[in-house]
Amino acid sequence: MLKEPKRLLKGFLPKETAQHHRDNILILLKEAFQKAGVTPFDIDVVCYTKGPGMGAPLVSVAVVARTLAQLWNKPIVGVNHCIGHIEMGRQITNSDNPTVLYVSGGNTQIIAYACKKYRIFGETIDIAVGNCLDRFARVLNLSNDPSPGYNIEQMAKRGKKYLQLPYVVKGMDVSFSGILSFIEEVGINLLKAKEYTAEDLCFSLQETVFAMLVETTERAMAHCNSQEVLLVGGVACNLRLQEMMADMCSERGAKIYATDERYCIDNGAMIAHAGALLFKHTGPTKWDETYCTQRFRTDDVEVTWR
Image (cartoon, rainbow, N blue to C red; front, side, top):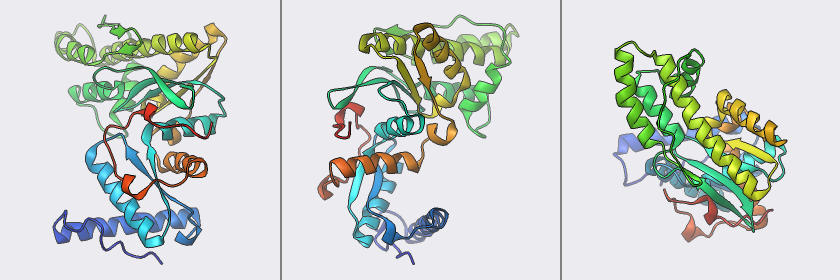
């Protein structure tokens, strides 16, 4: 029987709202235990996302994790969200030492392992690629069901006419904000003039931003002498991105590894897996360090398990 985390959210929310959140958390926990066929007594360690991410979700999860760790007298491990994606991808695909393209709504990074850390070889200097796609989906009034990025992908499959967009690669880094501004202004005017369709604009946007990602990933592969690419993060579900990356890998005699939406999209299993690795090789997180932070770099984590 689960103990109710009475201290949860106390003092932060009105009594009725806090009670509603507690009830939802208890329901979620009970469902998770039932599906997994375990009880709190079977748990060795409580893992949670320490960062990076949006403040409110991070705080909520950290509060719940700290409360449960105390109630159940379990050690706790704070996990870097990006590391969770990488280690889940490596686990599912059995890739050895890949160059990683991590693409999501909040992150865009080209990563490679070296000297006990995941080194960031390149990244976005403004918004993430997923953010770019999602924001353009809102401009077109596309549905959020199942996700804006997915609907952009489906629209792009029917696009035929390519619109030349800014191609912004700066060394190993990429920039998407200017592309978004351009297509929001110029592209929409062309759409109104019926020179391009919405499908054409989705197609053009995808082809441009994905080409930028393929170019920078290939450059990182050349630098690291790598023969593997691993795609992780929510945008990695996009089949067109996987296809373009596969073409590049084929030309280099390299292998591409990708998973489906079960493991690409944020999930608890990836945090549990990365947390288990950390716990086994480093031990629990010190209690005074079990906070959350929106700014938690991938290369801040010492990778002790490799």
